[in-house]
Amino acid sequence: MSTKLIRPSRRSLLKMTGAAALATPFLSIRAAAQTTELSMLAWYGHAEPDIVGEFEEANNVKFVPKYYTGGDNMLGLIAQSPRGTFDVILSDGEYVQQLNAAGYIEELDPADYAFDDFFPEFQKFPGHWQDDKLYSVITRFGFLGVAYNTDAFTEEEASSYDLFADERLTGKLGHFDWHLPNLGQMSLHVGNSSPYDIDEAAWEKVQEHTMGLRRQAGGFFDYGGTFSSLDNGQMLAFAGIGDWITGTLEKNGSPVRSVIPKEGGLQWTESFSIGKGSQNQEMAKKWIQYITSPEGQAKSADMAAYPAIVPSQAGWRVLNETNPAEAQRQNMVLGQRNAMDMIREGLIQYRQLPVQQSLEDWNDFWSDYKGA
Image (cartoon, rainbow, N blue to C red; front, side, top):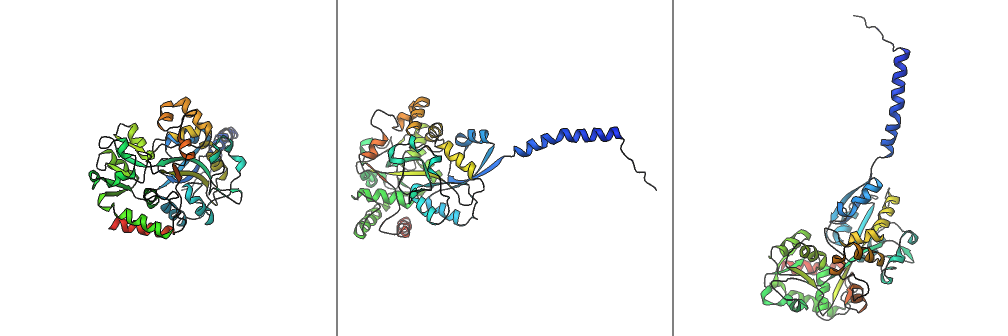
């Protein structure tokens, strides 16, 4: 059987050529508009729609998050990942130096970021700079104190770490499962004004005091477990947390709250860096600029996953204009005694890595405490 070669006529050829020409611009537009994927290593909530949605839409970006709990977990995930895996890295402030020393983050240009909007205390935040070079930009912070069930205890009772030893809390004291905030609070309770810079005698005292609370402990919880055990009343008080957990529950009607006790509280700090070897550094920079803008800061303060205080005075003003109730609840109202005064009065100490012991020493003791 023979086949006949069919040649297109000049007219049909022109039609096909014209159709291809018409289609080409649309193909080019689709190619040019391809969505950029921006990988983020962070605590839960930072890449959720309430925080990143507007930025994604405006910049044709899609965040791809990897969530962790605790700085040690974060470092482990980076160490196990190829260079350039994470475009933006959210870390607790005390871990920035370790990220930098390990070569995990890029140097940043301070001129790219609105530090003039920040309170003076946060314009050159300790550990985020090295030799006058910037490696991370602080975005939010909060305080750790005594978290408690308001149906079970009064604010006055919760205004001392002594509450943790109350017999009514036997088997009802929860711990957020991370050694730094818990042991920092125990160190404050035994009288160390610099809770992470203590000699061996003071460290022994912290360990002894902490072990004395073991019969009180009802469990050691991750982020989700902390929420649920407070919400359902399984735990009536918690060590190692603050409003970043109880604030969300309180806004949803749960009878829980946090208070900074008379012995003082701790400050947790979160900041963004650009991952070493990121192929999307310009977009990563644009993201950090967005989240530290006044509007981005107001959004971050009221993040659905967990609220926070923000370092930008301009962000405070926007929050007071758009959400005055939350500004008041978090003590972020200018012109009256507020969260910044608590820092300036010395009631709050920065959470940091141990100075005179190794991080492994603290972690090993925490494992012993949990297993006792």
